[in-house]
Image (tube, rainbow, N blue to C red):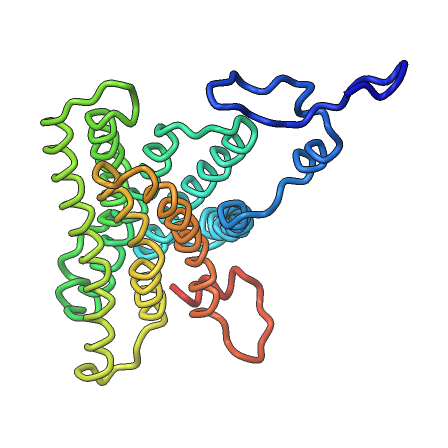
Length: 304
């Protein structure tokens, strides 16, 4: 349409079947520029920003736990587990935030991100299972626990968790094509089955230990319940509600279609961030005394 001398004709943004990609001039209308500058909020963007907010709060909480346990509190057997748990949670949240920032900047996500973040998550699961089991045994068999437990058990178990969990995850990820393009089907099935069985067993140990402590404290034991009961029970419940979906995402990832995975994975990631961010809050709630304002170091020491 000729609009007069010196004025260029307007073009509508239409895409015909079989036509090539639109040119830059077709995206230069004011309406399109406004949409690109202010993209509408969708469910996925809301979940993304919630994940960032929860992750930042969890980083701060776990950093405070690491600072006080590392430098200001005498480390007993349970404090060693809590220190390493906070380190694993801090690593998971840090990797998650870093990869989310890269994804937002580049607009793409690599399967390597999930494999790396799941390494930190699996280390935390190993540590949580060991911590819960030792707390349970110390209360069920106190005399045997104090007499037969080697002095450096906590440090050795934590070291084994950091040493064994990453290869178990990375071997599976490599065989299933998460670290590189090629996929070895038979090796993937074997490694994946072994990895899933081990992780589910650890989750069952962590949850069962909390359940045993709950039943033992309510029905069988006449002694006053220690404060770490609350830490074990809260961690087990948090794992069941918020950590299990992320574990299921690792379990079902090779079998889920892409449209289901794109819906389920962001929600599972958000819940996993809640799982790793909620533990410092559990320690604070267990150790605090109502009506008193105390330093975080005192509250954390009392909870252990």
